[in-house]
Length: 437
Image (cartoon, rainbow, N blue to C red; front, top):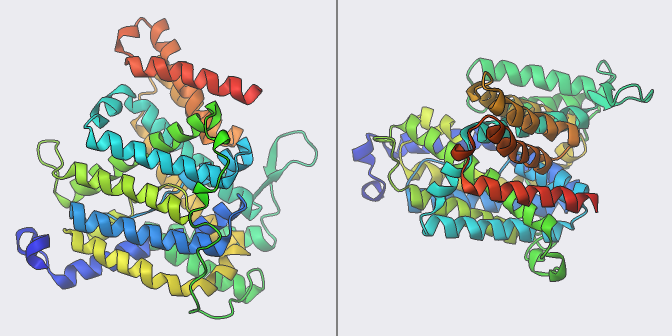
């Protein structure tokens, strides 16, 4: 085992890798409860999604560890699950089974572009500023969902404004505010599993105050996967060949592709794997991610992707794929803690702080955008602003991708725009035409 993963070569040990794997799990364990909460809004069975989430994370992380040998964990991605539920299913009226098929196809395309070596062309085609803007916009969108679910932000009954501040000194909103404060303290103090710990403490306080229901137990039977397993293949395939689903697939692919690439390089660089701006076994790592996406869709969850929380495990000493193997085992063991779902599913205020904090972390990419160049600032700003205001990640991306060629041409920089961006310009124009219809 130590020879396969190269313990001596990387100056690590079984104990160090095990501690790192557990640390990574604790840093991202919140997804086990947040993902079912979000996807249940799309009409999916929360118990089945819980099981699918744990299995997709375990399988994807295991593939990453054994195949690519990197200490990077995977799970259904935040932002992508929100786009799946609120943008695709509720916003566009696409059945969740069909949306899962879209996720499955995006995973297959990801595999294809990885195997055929054309991913570099795609990466270079889309300007960095739009990638940063998309990440930040998704962060604001996720935070907005958290604020809304907790009742901190509510519709304005007077209709003078679209939203208003909720009754934050009462019940559920106050619990969410408490959760945010506690989680922030953990994060500021440098606790690797700060989001998870904050969520647990918020749950305990919620139960003690009667805001959150008491679970029937801690350990229980694994929820059945039947309500979601293979449902993506039981769809009306006449609904597949539409402009709307094409945009959905492209959005899933776009966000997953660049989120994975960014996370992969960030964590690998932290661990000291990047040499001369190149990452060894990058193809295998991307293949693990894309395979996990399609497998997760078959099980019944939205796009599975690499998690930046893996950096917590690297900080704890994780240097090989054995760290990921340990994290995968932890996700399998987590399957037996399904009774806790009752508390998290019936008290959105418990999970809202996790959404808000993740949103803050994702919004940090705003600092990487060159706001001094107006031709860049306009499409980037529209991308970021449109996501929370239109309650749609796809719409935000579409606005930015349409405006970018316009501002660049107007600035006299048309030759700097990749031909693929001009193609996407017309694709997203068709997207808006489809929505109008």
